[in-house]
Length: 246
Length: 227
Ligand SMILES: Nc1ncnc2c1ncn2[C@@H]1O[C@H](COP(=O)(O)OP(=O)(O)OP(=O)(O)O)[C@@H](O)[C@H]1O
Ligand SMILES: [Mg+2]
Image (cartoon, rainbow over all chains, first blue to last red; front, side):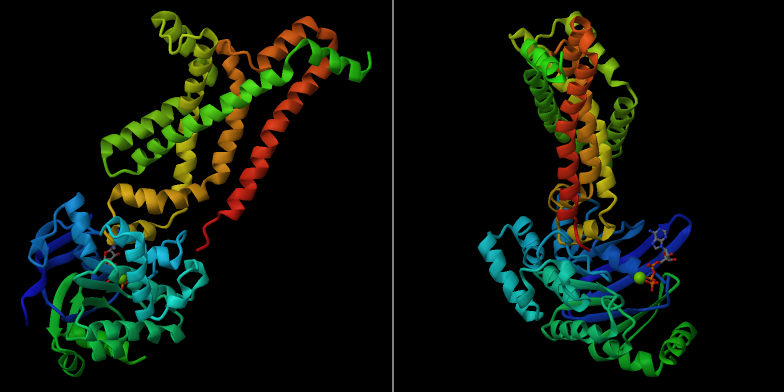
């Protein structure tokens, strides 16, 4: 592995009395694609969200490219921009056109001019295959198209790492692949990615490493081949048994 | 006297349109003032700073629960009479401005709540997406939350505006020569025309208020955020 781009050290988080993240240590190298697997409620979303501080942590530290995430303020906003996030429910800005969704961050955070931002945005929309929809509003697009726009919007911030929290779970089945293909391309281009997904085919295909979470703990980490053919922990065996048998 | 004669008697003796024009002006300026104050209050109430939240909440509870007439009286008897705080040299304009300020302060509480109800129509995911692309609290509020919240609060904002238009009659307490004050003197001096007098003022407010209602209903449909 190269030098760690994302580094979590002894991260702990509670929701009230619920200990959702238990002493998480995780290093993600530059260009690495990590797939987070685990049963429902195991803390996958929470882990993702702590990495760009949408959730605070109780102890431990998280650093991106060597810089520790600060608690709050402008510095945090800047570091957040280095971490792209794609949500299950797309969360496109509902009152803005597709193009404006993608240009907003570059203009307001990166300080690009309107023309520069629009040029970059169109290139990104072309890359994810929705450039013909640029002038439409989010509600006019299919779920798959919206999610690809969301990916373009995150990429427009030139993030060092991209987080995906179940990016295809809210999609109709016929649209899942268009989004997964976009993600595979992104991975091929060397983007560092942390992905929560239930798409096992994608996990096999795209992952460099599977991180298996249960009950807020990292129980097992392995290459996809190893993990799927020879899971070591009982909890991983149990999980795979349930997932792969239906 | 025929109905028409009664009308013309009143319109010849009194500057009815001029009086209503004062109510329209009070509404206009107080609407702008209350919108600005109300937006700031709403921002405070959703801010992550507890002391600001507290101030916003306290303001809303205090002013929403105090009768407007009492506020107006306090402003005139308390601030004006006690401290002789003259805002502009012109005497009439001074009272007008007092009335606008009190109306704005009072209705800001309702504007704040209207905007807050609009903010509640904006899914959390919108704010999270804004934060995720690196927008801080103010840029996120300005570009993402407020524009959507305002579209979602047009109807309650319209209701507040209607209430404000009618509440401008309270400015009479501050000796502003507006419609309800004129109505009182009409009744005093032309009590035989009481039916026509009521009709004039009821219709006058209908003419001011109904378009507001129509406009806001139309706008809330037209501008609704499609999700
Ligand atoms: N805001 C919150 N307040 C309280 N508890 C929460 C909150 N968010 C999540 N939890 C709890 O924390 C635990 C971990 O949740 P999390 O969403 O991270 O799980 P997950 O692995 O993403 O699950 P899923 O596969 O269902 O998405 C769960 O028990 C959940 O109920
Ligand atoms: Mg989840």
